[in-house]
Image (cartoon, rainbow over all chains, first blue to last red; front, top):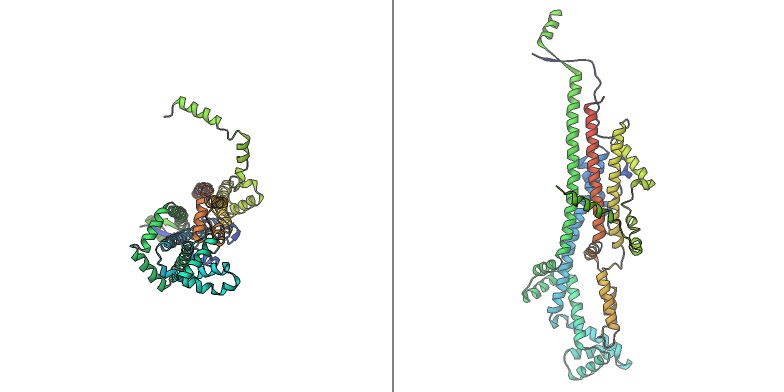
Length: 274
Length: 189
């Protein structure tokens, strides 16, 4: 039988795989945020990661800073990719609406634009009748049609251009409302698109195909940041495994230094001597 | 295995590749290294040197050996380089994003061509407000960032190369430092 007995304190090796843990911030660097990014959210995120990982030395603090900044970058590129695709969809929607809006849907803007042009080009005595004339023109009243056509050709334009401008203005307004997710506009737009045999999803897919290179660029940036973040995490794991091994070895050596293994004969001899 | 002839030929070609020869070429490339300053060694900048020194001291333990101090310095320098690359990329993006008139070169060329065509005789009528709106319109939101990424793709790729190399150097230096510490831990004498 072998027995472990305590012997006098021996010098133990210090675990020297890590440097001292301090809280000197300048070595880490300030957070790099783009315009519109929330500094407080970054700080909260950084605090959460630090609390989870609990860096034990300067090197780990450097890697945790790396992880925080790279994860922030991953989230940024994902968010921007979503925003970009949404913008593409809305742009495609506007192009579609400019083509497919019925006159009834933008007639109000048409009359308004026409009245504005007439106000600028009628004599002072007739300015007040501009709106009425525009309305009559929209209703196709012969007198108004002749007069307005003359005025428009006099300034080098025609009703088609005015109509296109009004249609584009209405389309823009609908797109903005659609972007704000206003229920009435969503229903109206979905109806218009369904009438044209398409849908918002189809428009987004089409727009994405045209901008695939850009979408892939966002994906590549995300992938690069993810790979680097994972490498930093892996580096912490690797060092902790090494550190863990050092702790295990040190603990064993401390125990060995504290206790001495003795054989049965030694125990019996001591008993006899006692 | 590479033949002797091929090696001789490669060496001769390499000797001939001595950079731009014409005055124009030399003028274009003479400030390349200063574009983002990432190729400049840390030792050429006093503030960075001091920062690297401070970080190296933090990484190495107070009574560490000369070998550990040297390896810690390598880790610190690589880490400062990683940060420099990160700052350079951030600077490039945020500078472009904060420019309210930022537009792609292709878009600016197109606008110039449209304006030229409108100055010609028999040019179609375009309302002034529409024209001003077209000329002054610039990309916004995610579209602006997408434009910047597309326009600055070369610069961003160059910065990314420095970042990658600095990270690789940091990893190598760190592993060497850990190995040295491990060796020292096993054989303190």
